Amino acid sequence: MTAEGHIIFAIASAIFAKRAELTPVLASADWWHLVPATLLTCLLPDIDHPKSLLGQRLKWLSHPIARAFGHRGFTHSLLAVAVSLWLFKINIPADGFLPADVLQGMTLGYLSHIVADMLTPAGVPLLWPCRWRFRLPILKSQKGNQLERALCLALVGYALWFPAGMPSFGANGWPEQLFSTLQNGVSRLVNGQSD
Image (cartoon, rainbow, N blue to C red; front, side, top):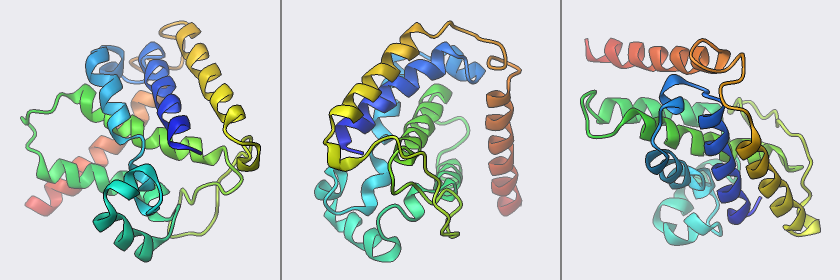
């Protein structure tokens, strides 16, 4: 997927996450926190590709990561998300300057990139280091980015149309339980190492 597609997909993800109230934090998130935070990290997984938009600007970081993991390797996995959250948690104090909606927006942006890349034939190794590729190849790169742009803009439209607070989302829905489980796991890991 192109950088443009990832940016539009991330905007759609932010709108959907807030309207669907995926977590209580996202439900009450400030739009001026959520959207920029999501956009901040939506291109980050492509740091493993030296010719990507981010890779061209951060060559000193992109080239070693590309050599170590290749494109769509570690940075496109759930392990990368967990490691990033863990590193962030141990380096930023709990009473730090970063609001909760910004942190969840940043996580959402990173995850939106991975989900968007799952829509291509190459897929992503969600369970890296396992080599299994998860894909739903709706977008084919040889057709240009017109289909990609149309799909992403349609997702923005759907996110705007989506009725707020649908059942199975919200304060007690499965997304909140998933985020809580992940946050508790990272907290236990951090607290276990600091004891």
